[in-house]
Amino acid sequence: MPSIAVILARSGSKGLPGKNVTPIAGRACVEWTIDDALASRVDRVLVSSDDDEVLRIAHRRGVSVHRRSAECASDTATVDQAVREALVGLDADPVVILYANVPIRPSGVIDRAMQMLEESGADSVQSYQPVGKHHPWWTTRVDAQGEVRPWEGDVLYHGVYRRQDLPEAFIPTGAVIAVRRAALDLQLGVEPGPHAFFGLDRRGVVDPGGQTIDIDCALDALVADAMLTQRRRRAA
Image 1 (cartoon, rainbow, N blue to C red):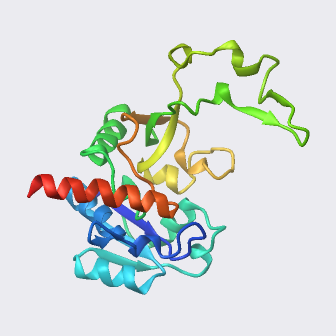
Image 2: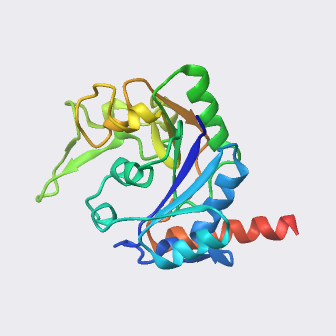
Image 3: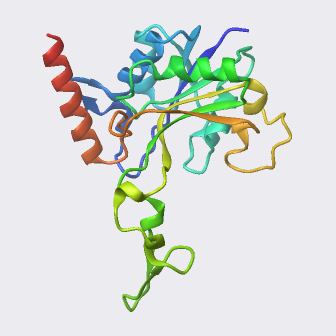
C-alpha cells in the first residue's frame, strides 16, 4: 500500500495567529514542511487545512489538499481525528504526520522514522531530542507562599546538582510521527486516550537538541527565520 504524508495546518492559533503562513526566510512557514515531505520517500503528500491561503499554497506546490471541517479545525480536535478525516476514502499505509508550523527539522528524519517503522514492526515512530537543562528531576512545586517542594518524591532535585549526573530523558520534537494505519484507526485495542493512535509498540528516533524548530510564538518564528536565512546565504 502506498505511504502518505499528511501535513496538518489548522488556521487557528492563540500563540501566534496565522503561524502556518507567517513568512519565514521569505516563504510561508508551511512551504518548508512541504519541501521536507516532497524530499522524503513518501508516495503522496496531502495538506489538511481550513485556511484558504494554506490550501492555495499547497495547490500551487502540486500536492493534494483536504479542506478540514470545522469540527476537526477546533482547538479541541485531536491530531489523529484530523488525520483520519483527511484520509477518508484513501488507502495508505504507513501514514506520516507532519506539522506545518515546523519549518526546520533534521535532514532525513522523515525517512529514518519510516525505516524504523518498517524494520522494527512497531506501530508508531516519533521524533525526540534530549530534554536538556529542563530535566524533569529538576522540576519543583512552588506554592503561594513561595515554599519549594519536589515535584515528585521527597528529595529536592532527586539529590542531583550536576547536569551531567542526570539520567537521560527525551521530549518529542514535533519533527515527524510515522504510524501504521491500523494504529491510527484505533484498531489495536489500545486504551482510549489522546495518544491511543500511537498503538502498543511505540518507538523513537533521536536527534540532538536544537535541530527542530516548532513555532508556537513570535520568538520561535524569529529564531527559525534567522536560522533558515543563514542557511540560504551559505548555500548561495
